[in-house]
Amino acid sequence: MFDGHFRSSVDRAVKPLGNTLRRTKISPDHLTIAGMLIACGAAVAIGNGYLALGLLLVILAALPDLLDGALAKASNTSSQRGAFFDSVVDRVTDALLFGGVAWYFASHESPHMAILPLAVSGMSSVISYERAKAESLGLSAKGGLMERAERIICLCLGLLFPPLLIPIMWIMLVLTTVTAVQRFFKVWQQAAVAPVTAAKIELRRSRRQSRRSALQSRRTRPTTRRPS
Image (cartoon, rainbow, N blue to C red; front, side, top):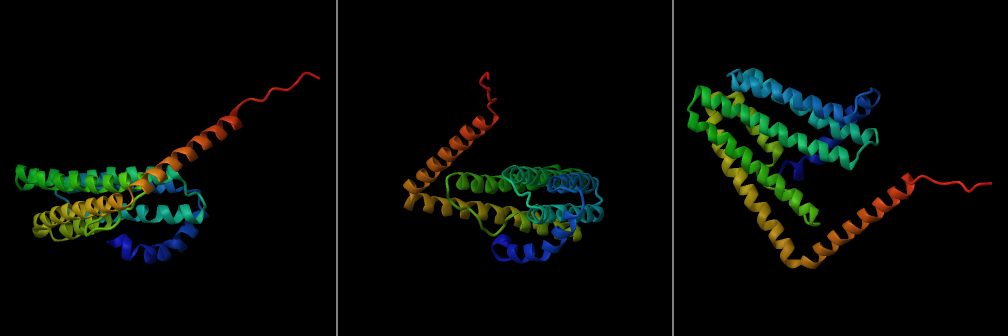
């Protein structure tokens, strides 16, 4: 939902920051790694009951994730490798944060409550997989009530108001499940009306990859000189 309504506005807002960061020697990958390391600290802080510190670190961890794309665009270093790396780190970061909440629940609430944030993390992975699989088939699975931005915002609200953390986790679980169902039926309907189109897109993608591989092999093949 956030990506559909506010992503373009946020990208325009952080574009000047990307141009500023371009003058440094920092790369988008550096920002991505920094965000993951800060998220590790946030998970440890939350797990040990320092929720205010955890909230601050979650916000700080979100900043590099917000700026790495702007820096990549400003420095013309956007690539498939960078997009893949950023996506994987996002999943790792989510697992760390919800793992920290599970640790907190097991230590300060009830061991059974630790299942709740783990369930949210599991359903979040389903949402991410649905989008990745749909895009690999040439379909679209964007959108939904509870995407990653919404999950981070809800987590921050729960850390800001600790008595509401458990109810917010329940709300996140319900809305995340609804989002997974929404994306499933969205892709299901697209595949039903255009199954051949999806197959053709996948075939063209495979052919392009084969041509790239052949071209790369010719470029790297050593040349032999005829004897004079």
